[in-house]
Length: 331
Image 1 (cartoon, helix red, strand yellow):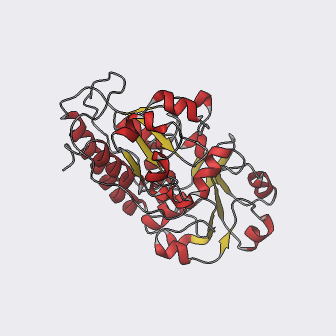
Image 2 (cartoon, rainbow, N blue to C red):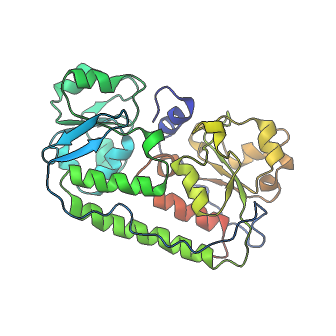
């Protein structure tokens, strides 16, 4: 969702449907990662809030304060993730416009009017008479442009504010408040938390203390996701070692083929199949036959929407990865 930073741009460009290639993985050794025990780490009910009165004050990513005197009635969402959340909590009646990449659920794909978050037109947005605009990246300077028109902006930068599954849950709770659908948001959060807990409980019961090393591919030029992203948090939850590590401080770093081959991950996850990358094409890359994941046929494709978009379906991604990584535990 980052318009200027290459890695987050990749996330938005991949916010389209990609075929799932999760084949049944063979049992046996899940591969050696770094030594870390599967510790029992109970999940609290994240994001759930108690009904509270307006006005509410929210600190934006630029340090400015947003004050809302009541639920928003005309929201322009420049974030496909926020749009998906609003539909999930039943707040779609509050939408006045959505980003052109919003494609889930079907009602979001069909929603009109659409706006362009890559090159936002402030006049076109203002013409929709919003009482709130949701912004996940300010690379275009849209926040300042809207501020000058006195249009309320909820600016929560995807890289700074959404670094974990819990952060996504927090945004679900927040958007529930903003759209006046707190009860539905809380019900959704109880369900999502329970599903995450179910995954964690099965990991605790595994007989091994070694997790797999994983390479997550965002595109064919080897952009990946670091530990400090919500994608990286999925791998932490699954006790897997992300070979991108901290990305050198970059949320979505570009790795080199040499580094990937040298790391020899046990598992490769492809979030770029919609751009023609396939399991077979990865196996055919020069030098990649030396990688454990290629040798052991542990390359999995995943829908870019569910893993690259901070919305409720991130738990779908977690569950699918868990089944692929640990097939014996998730029968």
